[in-house]
Image (spheres, rainbow, N blue to C red):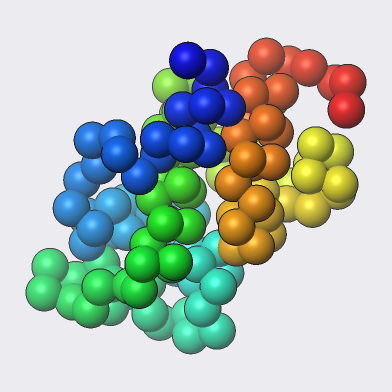
Length: 127
């Protein structure tokens, strides 16, 4: 199973930390504003509330985006530094038609994110 298959099809079934812990990690690495952005929330404070041990739980569509972001982050961290991984999330990507991975995740373009991540990890430049 390739990276693309693993992210696009099974990211919701991988061993993930509890939702609050997962969001806390994303907040720590990407910042609450970027987590709110990729989740599709206009409230930049919601990621803080989601990260609290007894905090609110995001709705299923948002949780799916957060799980994709977390899974992607974990894969990137196995290969790159935290700064480069964060830059990947916020940088324009030719495999996403110039959009950022953050935007693609927010727009539920999970398959495209998987392709972009795989291309990045393989250092491919061909679009």
